Each structure stands twice: as C-alpha cells, then as structure tokens.
Length: 281
Image (cartoon, rainbow, N blue to C red; front, side):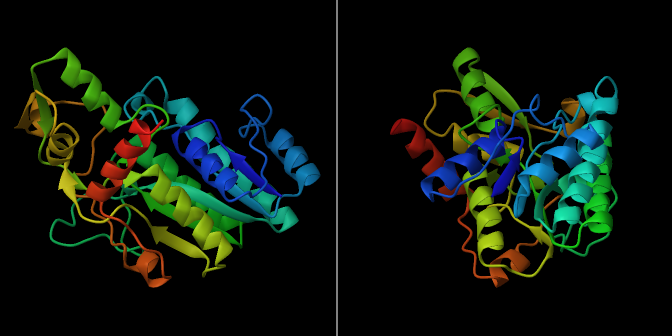
C-alpha cells in the first residue's frame, strides 16, 4: 500500500493522477483524516495502514506568510509534521519520499550549479523549516529520498503560470523580476521522478529535480505570455519587495537525477506540454 500526504495539493494531485494512470493503488487522506502535526495520530494511522511507501507531499508553502503570521504553522507542518511521518515510517520499514526546495540555498553560488552536497544556508523561514525537515528525515528514517525542487508549476492549484495568465487579462503591462535565476519545475515531471526513484529502487539519498534549462522569472513570464497581447517588462527585486528573501541564483545541478536514467525535459517543453493538456481537457 502507498500513502500520499498532501494529496489535494498541487503536487499531490499530480501524483495521484499519475498513480491512477499506472493503476497503482494508494491512500490519500485529507488533513482532517490525517493531521500530520499530531504525533499520536500519525503513529496510529501509519501503524494500522502499514504502507510500504510514503510520498510526503504535505507542506506549508506560503513563503512570505511564513515570515510572520504563518511562522508557527510553517514550523508545525514542515518540521514537526515531517518528523512525525519519518519516525512512523521508520517503525514499519516504509520508504519515505520528501519534497524539499531550492530555498535551502542562499544563492551566493553565482557561477555554478548547486550540487546535492552543496552547503545549505536558507535565507527565509520557509527554507529554514524545509531544511529542518530534511534533517528530520535523515535523523529518523533509513530508507528515504529527499528531492529538492524549485519554481513549481502545474495544472492543479495556484502557481506562477496561472497568475501570469490571469494578470495578463487584467493589465496591459506587467513587470516581472529579472534578477533571480532558477529552474522551473512541472509537477508532472516531479511526480514521474518520485515514482521512478521508488520503482527502480535507486540509491537512497538527496536528489535535485527540476526541468532542464534555467531562466529568470521575467524570461519564464515572457514564455508563458508569448501569445498574449500584453507587454512584459523586467524589474529588479528591489523594485518588487517581498517579506521573504529569495536566493538570486538557485540553479540546482541535475546530474544525479540524470545518472539514474531519468530523462528530464526542458522547462520550455514542459510548459508547452502542460498547456496542451489543459487545451485537451
């Protein structure tokens, strides 16, 4: 049996769709059915279900809110919730797949890509909590995949693609940050990698998974809106202040993910495929 936490979220929905396509059985409880911040409830649920694999997609992802009003929830879900899942998984010998973030890095590695063993130094509360989640997985679980990803977009839930498309309908001109560089990630590519790693029984440890090629948010927006009648202009991060500091350069090295035989499409191809999927619905 497979357990999916956060099954109604952006990634969890994509993962469930993929498992359905592959006719792989799973259980995806709601947060009411499984409150991951309740240690006793987690232990009881997992002890009774006895899943062989836990895809831990549940997370608090409001990066700016995590700096103040969401700080406590950020810690409860991303740190304590992850610790609870890891400890319960280890007790029954389950494999755990944990999704982390490029925000564990500070962006100072400007002329290179972040390898899986690169020094971490998160700039914001969200990144700090996700790193503590990684540490909890490594401390309490022996069979795990920590998958760091970045700039996630997909067909389910709110994300940058839908935000840009909505704003383009409301405004003749948009300004988008052009001094933060990273790799966009399609949830389908990420979900496929998660299942691939488990199915192929690849070596446990930390992996980086995003779509190939890199860009700035401005370049990403230009590609999203290339067929729209809207002007997109670049601005600096200073002109677009946010509560949480973001790394200016968070390009993660994908060589470890590629070395296990997983083929990674470019973010441009991934975006095009997602748009075609939406048109065909």
